[in-house]
Image (cartoon, rainbow, N blue to C red; front, side):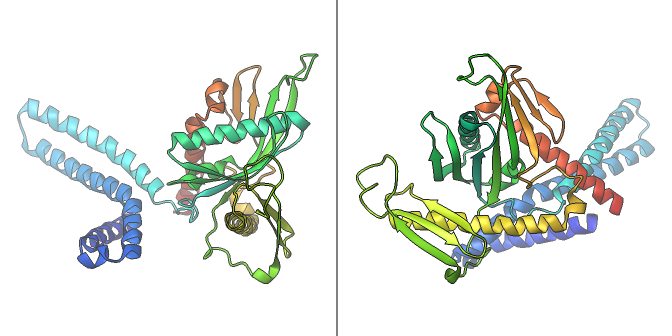
Length: 358
């Protein structure tokens, strides 16, 4: 591990020297690439420098204990020694986590797809609440939300919604949300006061850039039509809505949220690219199923991951057996404790596998 850390430190110093060169500032692409690398390496370098300093402190304290006869100075040296040894253990774990192989999609923006599942209108209302929960969470992270496609029902519910979240580390946190979300509560339309169970399915897809997925235009049928539903001056009067049909997969994308046909077409292709990338990721996950079976689920949309029980004010995260009794805060977007716990559990499994291989 420490050979890698010494190499990382050398690379970091080399990169900092490059960033100070005038030629780099005049090359925006290279400058952006180096700044991204600096951002990735800084936590590792800072932890490693502190680790090396603690190792030096241990050596200095041991030397002082050998040479010093003053009892007060010896006590100070012992205290420094114990603190440094404890911190070294902590830093070793931190460095192992920082050096875990990174998901190549972690820095990407995400496209979120929410679909009402079992439960009729109640499921559609729950899907709309899940959508609002993620919007609030994104706002708390200073991420931007952009709606791509939405199918609403008259009572405030949503049959389906696709939206993009743009911001640093969006996929690294949101990827744990894929799966079946289950709600247990008494619907407003239920006169007998019985608790019903409904579901919504969430799929999290990294935004695919053109370099990630190449689409053969001969495989895509493009239809334009008038947008349906309520709208402004242009909606319903011009052929602004776009429908894409990807023949090899049968995927159909419909986009009508913008007034411009060109903008709707661009949104539709962004969504199509991300869906095709998701198919590739799922294929890869299937190939690695044996390796992934013990990991925290991060991709199977059929996996029941969480229950929201309104009568008890309870939210249960099934993958890590975490139960929290503050459902109101969670529905308002306070997902930090859940997502941080999922990340920690995932890292723990990966560290265990890493230690087994060593």
